[in-house]
Length: 354
Ligand code: TXA
Ligand code: MG
Image (cartoon, rainbow, N blue to C red; front, side):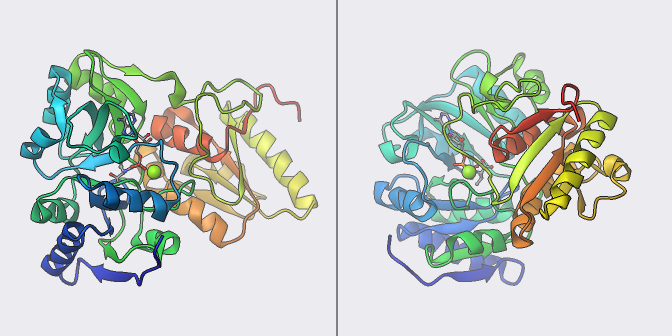
């Protein structure tokens, strides 16, 4: 991978200039970090195998993990997919532009590097003016994973992408914080019933409403077994991982607090720097914990905060993070990400003797 100077442009200062710079870089075959409503993306011309290879190099991403192709208008679908099922059409109509990546049968023009050898391709139309602006002006479909080093939490601020990719990408477009904060929902729409492969802000309920039915792939929550540390079922790669060791606690609110408080005090006795992450309504259960990070009051707020907070844990050199889960209130997307961040280290407070 060639080292290069990294230039940051600010879209709030010069929107048109930022769009022009982004589109020019894409047309040259270069890489561009750009904001979307979910997380920052690392984009390249999806039709160019060479440009796409550089995405994998810059991120250190395993080559068998396929990329999402971003478009600005449905007219671009023609060259990208071979078939649009009724299911896919219904989902586009309901959720585009927006945080839904739809897997369809791919057209020939999509190179092996983008689909990682699969016969399908994930396509998404982002709900962000900067993202759609550079795609439209370049007139190219843009392959873009999240703009983080592979394995790190996805970037929700341009600064996060800069920390990970400085010297590896020529251009970063800073468009401020991402509104949603977790990556798009990925749904397979090649069949009659849509299958959620990665949960996001668009929930299975919303998908069922638009398409008549939905299934959630079992790997989404990786089968949380009560009270045991499970080997990551079906997940090949460690994801979203800060340096700190993350443990997820599930169970009744009071039981979780009791377990976490005990483990916190044990860790403190050993001099371990530990933070507790929870929703606002649980903060009062930890009166003696020095570092409590509240993620907000509901799923939306927790989604927006999660990745930023995980990065902050590393900036502040926390060794241990205890995550007080409230599955119902936090939603599938947050639970899915934190379980991966924890490498499936889950403790069920119900069965844990303390
Ligand atoms: O919100 C998002 O989706 C962000 C922004 C930049 O748009 N992008 C993103 O891309 O999160 P990435 O590469 O970090 O995640 C893409 C996910 C991966 O889990 C990948 O395995 C899955 O989508 N994926 C892509 N194409 C697929 C396909 N053809 N079949 C199954 N899974 C696919
Ligand atoms: Mg990613």
